[in-house]
Length: 157
Image (cartoon, rainbow, N blue to C red; front, side):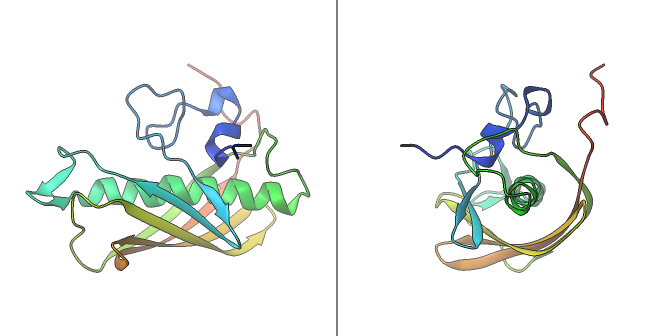
């Protein structure tokens, strides 16, 4: 049995995000999963996603932390509501704030691993702390505050 990613369980109308939307043809298609009490995502940047030769562009890294955090918050809210983790739809969250600390240059080539911990869940607000690592070395650290949005919060244009 294959476990669906959090992002696979978003409602269709919420599945177009550039970072994590499964329906965005040109997006990154970030896929996040539970690993015990942490969430995990592995990504492999394309050669053109560079800051300078051999190193990954920082904006791409911030996007990974943002969208992995959003998925992690949705999963935490889904879990807190007592819902089965392999069934959707998952609630959707938007980023209220994102703090990113670049600790060292991130090598292009080896897979990037993101691991997040749910710091708190209070009503519609979730705080997520993320470590981005390459070959076991922490390169970027982020903290995001995410807010669950009502299902009818946004209407397609």
